[in-house]
Image (cartoon, rainbow, N blue to C red; front, side, top):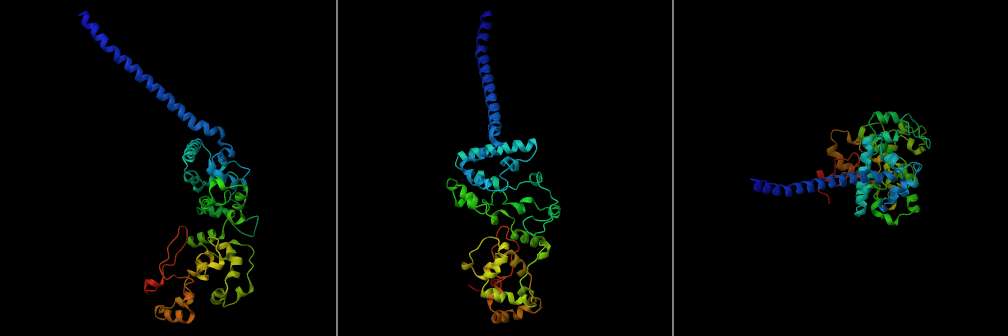
Amino acid sequence: MKIIKAQKTSQKTPKKDKTKKYLAAAVICTVVFVLFLVLWYTVPVLGSDSSEYCARCHVMAPEYLTWQNSYHSQFACKDCHRDYGMSTFFKYQGKLFKEIFSSRSGSGDAVTSAMQEKMPDSVCLGCHSENRQYSPSSDTVIPHSKHRQAGVKCVTCHAGVAHGRIVERGVTKEIPPEEWHKGTGREQMDFKYTTPRMAVCLDCHGKRRVSEKCSVCHSRQIVPANHKSGDFERSHGIEARKDFKPCNLCHVYSLKEPVELREISVSEYIKGNTFCFNCHLKPPSTHKKGNFGEYHSELARTRGTENCMGCHDVDKPKPRQDSGPINSVYCNKCHWFE
């Protein structure tokens, strides 16, 4: 019996050794995992309060250089990109670590995608008041409180304030990060990229069916004398087809994107200008007669098809993202033009 017991004892010893090994391995793995989590959040925290920390990643050069030339350069990156609260802090640090890893792997898109995310209003309202009525640099009347009540986000209008909308405009893809310098950052923070665009205002008003009269947004209205004539609604198109460049002196602010006037037609200009196109979407008096389908061909012959192309296209227009209303009536819906 004693021999048998000795044999059983000798069989149990290796199992105890294996259990101890497994336990030790589990403890080591746990320690490593905890250490990894600590490093995950602690290492970025050590420098993330400083904007220079972000600049260490070369793919962030465009964002860093544009920020340096903005009115927000007195604030650190984290002041806008990290909201208040512990939960958002950990979320921010996790995203920061992910972006560091993405930059090491050579994927710049994952890093710059953070710039496309809309900043919550709470970040802006930490410094700014929603009670502002007028823009200090112009005669523009902007009741911020009404926009807030209507659900309009701060960045809808102020998207370019810190980085000039470089991601939205595709500049970060056109110019590699290694080619950016202080001069590039200064150029990309030009007034036309940083200030709210009239096209955004008109596009939003058009979608929400809010009045687009000049007096709604401007306290002073300087209207040329020829605009006050009774037949201006009809005659302005004739004058524009002769030369629409003078029109652009005032209406350039409502263009969706900058254009080269020498390379586009007046009809193309109209469709790219929110002020013009929103008005052209409204049927003119000639279209309101019940038998318009019978005599519209006569109007096309007498006035020219260019007159039609100010609103319509030969083929169905392709809707673009955030392009606003699209005219659904086109020639080839009934005809067969090339």
